[in-house]
Image (cartoon, rainbow, N blue to C red; front, top):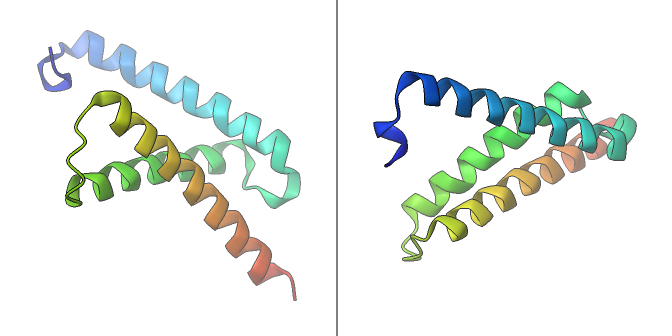
Length: 96
């Protein structure tokens, strides 16, 4: 069964679980980063966008890896790299 074949009930359940997990990771990053971060919700949004960008870049590249575990790892790496880049950019722009 693929994600496109899920019923509306399971889709809502998985979306809720993804939001809860995203908020927990965003809160953890907020407690680690403090003022250098973007708050729990801001971190959650940046991580979600980075996960999507990582998967999109993987889809457009010709790496040939199609295993779910590899795609998930690439998405996670994209998420944390985007949070790192955003924090670094914030640090550079506000450090005047």
